[in-house]
Length: 311
Length: 320
Image (cartoon, rainbow over all chains, first blue to last red; front, side):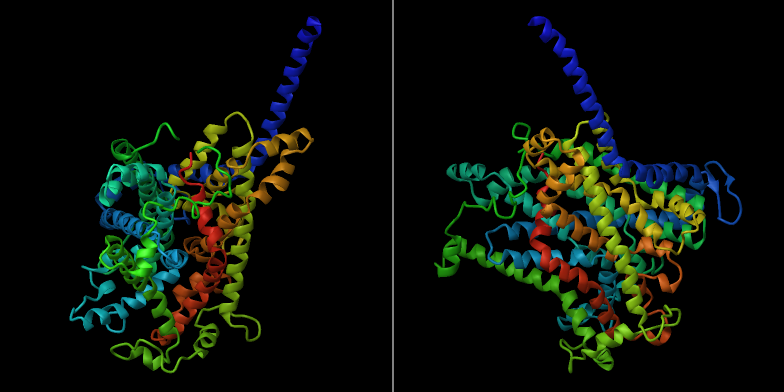
């Protein structure tokens, strides 16, 4: 008997091994679309773009190796690049936190056992599905200094409003306000997180006599920090790449106060056909996103609360 | 928390039960209860915010229905008098110098709508199929390199489109595919990182017993994927599908780079070119009518699918 069992074991193991092997083969079959796509449309282009960033190439003539010149020019001779960096930073620093606050406030309001929650949720989410060109076109019309609805409402309460998109002091602000209209996605994520909060904690806090403010500060906010962190990171990544809104609403003007990095990059690549230079710029954009993301991850250790036992 | 069944809706569970009498207080109005004042505050805030959020939609429709000279009334009027529903027809008929020349009297906007539809339908089908396929392997199969590869997929979320934009453009140029739909269609058959992540999370919530008994019965992984996992994942697939539809329908930078002749334009490109000819500069009513027509399909889709859609966005997050 024992001999048979001893005999049986290796057979079983090798059969298991072939099963595992076959599973591996078919798993790689399943993920092959992504692998092929990554090599062709991601990994390959990433390497190509990195190499290109050291070349001067205007599509018509063959590329010429110029070392770090693209990167050096960016920070020395190209004033527009520094302008666009500044614009993008200003936008991200103001718009991303504001969007978090607004979407969190909306989610908290919706979480108050309100009636017609479906209606409110739809209203606040709806702008998210007209992001991009259509939404930008509507806002451009609303911002019109004489015929636009915004200035006429302001005028009716006695405020002489600026020309918004045509005023270099307010154009960026106008884009930030428009961006706040599109907070649907972070809002529903916050709402889901709020609705998934463990009830027993609140019940326990109530028994201890905690008020609303105390419950929010001691339970809701700490448990929400991973979600806030997630939304902050995603908001930053998309905020740095903003393109359609300034393209449609201001075209980068007036006096380049809304010349975002994405816009300047697009002009360099497809307006002036400076492919090498645009690639270098894209790499700077990537480095900024990378650094900001890592930075947020490092900061996260200080304020993000992870539930370790229940995870 | 690891195994959450897909039907466990985040929107139906987890409602606060801390103050169950609030609704009663609101309905029957015991005036000086703190709960009542709080409710008043909540509803007033919601109402104010709703007005602010709806205003752009209202203003678009209001303008779209106005006769052209009413657009220039100062101060602007709050409702169209008389409402011109013919504006929508005129808006569709609108053509401008450099717009697509179409056979017969077909308005160019319909051509653009058709182009957009091709790209969008392909995008939705491609995204659903490829992302779910990849997600299946990461959720339900064992293979070496799995974790590293998954981390790789997630980290591509950080790579801005601008980095790959120029080399991709060069690839399409060398294939002679510029100004065709191929560059806007083919890459989406390779899965998208965000949707792979979303679907993987969802698939992981489906009990493994199904796979195991199917495997014992001799089913292949393809059978399990196609006959078990996909049918059980309709909420997640619907939400990814709607997301993808909205994305491709609204996409602008992609078509802007690839497409160059008017007969290939998409609706978003059309919208940015609408006012370029000088004589059209003042037709804000037709412009808003066009904007309305363009966002209408997304809005209809959203209204019909919003419960599933919103559930799907959130179901996967933060449930590690």
